[in-house]
Image (cartoon, rainbow, N blue to C red; front, side, top):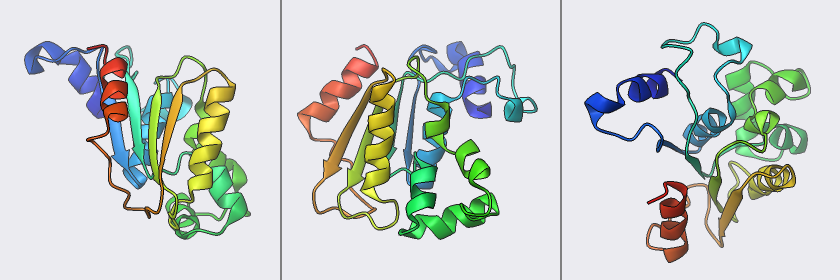
Length: 178
């Protein structure tokens, strides 16, 4: 949030278009990028965040590579490496505090005005199960959001981002309005 506000407030200095900023993350970073895409900037837990609160934190689009975007799914199913990592990060298991897991989940904050999401996920990911990516994409589409999910068959958690795919290049160009 701080970085986005700084970049947008100084867009002229950096010679960037403040209306075309995207978030990209891998694994835990994709979780943070996913949150950045759905937050409005006025949530109570951001009241002490740095930067001018009137500067938008809105993204043009979000790319999630193997990202845990539906933490509740991960907590409920409990059959992935991410369960322990998220439990340590949040200081409680899902069973102990499901509200905390929901509050940290990008899925909780989705609305139709959110930017498009591109999710790239491996079909054999044992760290963040592909089903959690499917769950996020389905919920996001159900409320009118745009989510493109690319499941890479046979790939694990370290799924490569297939940059040479024409479909991916077309999506990025469309999302950034080139």
